[in-house]
Image (cartoon, rainbow, N blue to C red; front, side, top):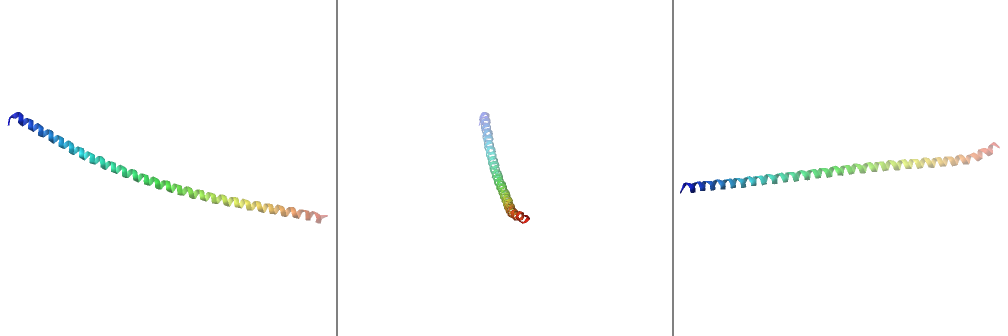
Amino acid sequence: MSLNKALLALALAAALTACQKTEEAATTDAAAVDAAATDAAAAVDAAATDAAATVDAAATDAAATVDAAATDAAATVDAAATDAAAAVEGAAADAAAEPAATEEKK
């Protein structure tokens, strides 16, 4: 084999080796990118689950607060109505007793 052919064969072997290493590196890089994408998807899913749980807990707390406020408001209105009814009954009793007291004084 001539020196030129030997050099050509050596250059071709070097080029094929370089191409093979580049392909292996690309495969390794693709696997790393795929793993990173899988990890990112899992992190996003976990964050979404946590956010949903937080929103659910906040909604439950808000509903409990609204329910307690409505109960308190209903109790306040009921007490005010009872007080008003007692005041009306007292005023009516006073008004009924007043003419009788006036007649007794005569």
